[in-house]
Amino acid sequence: MNKHSIYLRTVSLVLCMGLVVGESLVAAASIKPGASNQGQQTPSVNILAGRRSRLGGIKFRNIRASGQRSGGVSRGTKECDGEMVTLTALVPHVKKEDPQGQPVLDIHGKEIWTPFETSTIEPRTTFMVYVSGTTKTTAMFYLNKVIADNNDETILDEIPVTLPGHDGIVSISLPENVQLDLNQKYRWFVTIECDPSSVDYSGNVVAESWVNRNPIPDTLANQLKNAEEFDIPQLYADADLWTDTLSSVWELRQRYPNDPDVEKAWQSLLDQVAVPEVSEMKQATLN
Image (cartoon, rainbow, N blue to C red):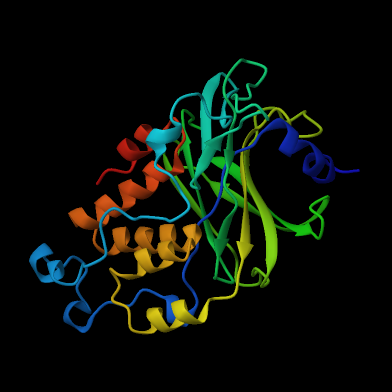
């Protein structure tokens, strides 16, 4: 039995962290600039103001604000080669509770945070994690296909990841030859190696979560065909597509790095990741 197979059966008992973001590759869902700003990288706020009817604080129907579940320490924070490293998937989290509604604590007495299971309509997805507290520059990304009853998994892909060597957000895109199947659940995780001699990776820092690829609803497909680029994130959010919402706002940030409404949308999504290090994420990603 190799390291990977051992890890698949131990990691979910050791660490539970967080998930997912989509890179828009479905034609109907891709962000499309309006004719008035094609060829411009940073149009003025005045030009864009009239077309930003739904951009700002992004709202989801089934995700609460972070203020309702703040406190505690994420399970993604761990000592690693003398550093206190935090690794968090950009997906909403909630504190784990026992049947009596009391917080479940880890062996260090810290509250355990677990990720929401998220959804995407994209065949290829970009996953995002927040990393802090380390000068390490390498990690590994694993994508596993969950088999039927969730009791088994198969490794679909593993990708070396370059870390920034400082606090920041890292995105991982699937290669051209890998895509998510419709109506299929996947578990993904990023791991930073702390102990090369470990046989099961239990000594590593890990962020993990789950994503389902769903068919695009007809209503959403029709809405996306004629949607302005600033309307798209909220359309995804209305359909509870966290992964696609996050990636669409991320793309807008790359296109309009100085736009205050785009930044407001991004910060509102970080709030909904809802782990204790949210304020650190915000500071690390400020323009």
